[in-house]
Image (cartoon, rainbow, N blue to C red; front, top):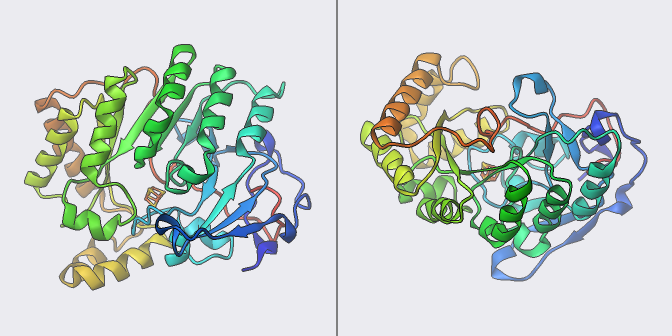
Length: 348
Ligand code: SF4
């Protein structure tokens, strides 16, 4: 692993940061011999700044993100963020699932960043690159400090997650929602457990995620569901879409936003090798559907969106709550950027 060739994130408030602040010796590598973390390696780093400006932010519903982790033990085969692991010279396949970078000082650095006179209190999105409530959060407990910092500055924020661990922080979320806009979205693309077991092997089962939605709405926070990804020929049958939207509605979700699978470089290779192992008869159909790039054709995406919106109306799911940005953050909105050139571990 070449720690001298790590990705550069924008520095505080988007300025380029000092690339020489941290060297390779700033990384502490740990493993934990518990069933939960067997086979996982954690690379603990100290961040210089944790507020990242989103490249091309004008196209996004938010401009700023906080990502305390890189890599994700939820191990979704299709995860777009795999590519950004390559910027760290880490493997984008199994390495993304098992080599987790942890910004151990994220809460204190965020508190300092938010207090800067240059910070204008803009919306901060979390969970837009990798899941901030992945299993590692159970051990490192970075999110309580992050949420407390945002609450104390009355700074609006949103979280997108597949992790049930978010319920641990329910009180903090409630406290924050009393003083600022808080939006929470949970990602549930389908209900099929056999499909879940192979394509999202490290995540809580979809029904458990819907229980999270139920708990959040029951606590008065409100919660949208990002129905993502809809997997062509695997979870897009009208009966599957109906069952998923019906369950989302029954969970009390305040909105449902469908998103068709996209396959960017890094994710594409990993997903297609999974497809060849588990559903070889679909490989040619996927090759045709994604022949022109990372996205399914517009006609396909429009069809899924229309079907889901019609079902949402039928099951009475209401509009997006006020605490959310114009649309919920979506996976791929804020991929961490590729470095312009070799830099040291200055910005993780
Ligand atoms: S899609 Fe989300 S939950 Fe799944 S591996 Fe990627 S970051 Fe983690």
